[in-house]
Amino acid sequence: MSAIETDSLTRRFGDVTAVDGLDLEVKDGEVYGFLGPNGAGKSTTINMLLGFTPPTSGSGTVLGYDIVEESQAIRQSIGVLPEDFGMYDRLTAHKHVQFAIEVKGADDDASALLERVGLEDAADRKAGGFSTGMKQRVALAMALVGEPDLLILDEPSSGLDPNGAREMRSIIRAEVDRGATVFFSSHIMEQVEAICDRVGIMRDGRLVAEDRIDALKDQFDAESQLVLTVDTVPDDLLTELRTMPSVSDTHVSGSDIVIVLNDSSRKAAVINTVEAAGVEIDDITSKEPSLEELFAKLTTDDVSKSEVIGA
Ligand SMILES: Nc1ncnc2c1ncn2[C@@H]1O[C@H](COP(=O)(O)OP(=O)(O)OP(=O)(O)O)[C@@H](O)[C@H]1O
Image (cartoon, rainbow, N blue to C red; front, side, top):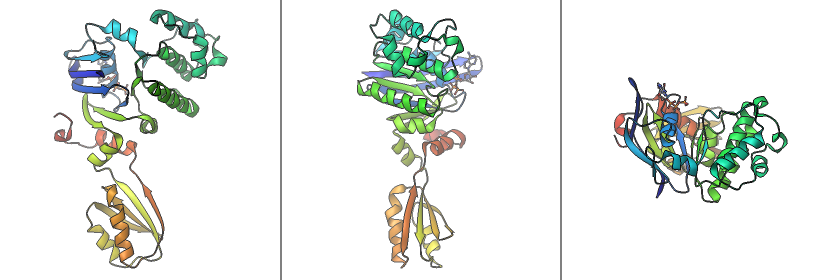
């Protein structure tokens, strides 16, 4: 069974189609990053999965429960870190987590959960005085209650400092190690690149790409760079490099030859060509495309709709 499955899921608000025929499948046990620029439809999708926003058309299941008919069972079974983690100002962090434990009928230890999210020292302070990051940590502790099979986290690191973001990553890893599935939306690409098995990229309510990150980089010809520090650059070497398959640009910078490739597996061929020209290579560095660059390409370029999954 898939943890999340949607079939042509659609939500319109007046003239705006926030989510447009979404077919999503999140497999059991994976970490799935749900990405997209502001307004792409991520929160609307999550709100439909949780039963907060009814779909205009289409259908979906979460842990096998229907998102329209069985949303209460869904909310009872999963852990959610919502985008807007409303807190009760006058309740302490401990009371918030205790409340979540009671609602779920779980037997967790609230103090242990607060320690896990790094809030043990603030457990007895009222949430009204908490920073955004502290509130986010409380909300995460609440999401972890009952060891849920699925965690849905909407922007889990948005309010966190770098230490908090690192702790969030290790909590997500620990959750996956105990068998949970994690579905989370994020704008923080390093975070996503560090922990996701697969990503789906939304744009204008549609999924424009979905795959493992390395496969996406190959699929969309993301560019990698090879920098060769050399003793000399023969006149005709650059011309020869430019005619090689997959080489999209070359230039010289000081004693470096910079070669831009849209297929990183061609690096060895480039190095062989340079050596065959009698050039001594003193150093080799290479830079792989980042998910950030890929994200920019997929969400700002005019990606043709034929490249869009399922179109
Ligand atoms: N309740 C609503 N009423 C009207 N329009 C809405 C409503 N909720 C969302 N929208 C619209 O639907 C589109 C998708 O919004 P959504 O919040 O799902 O995007 P998002 O990908 O989560 O964005 P962000 O990254 O900024 O959180 C936007 O055009 C938004 O204005």
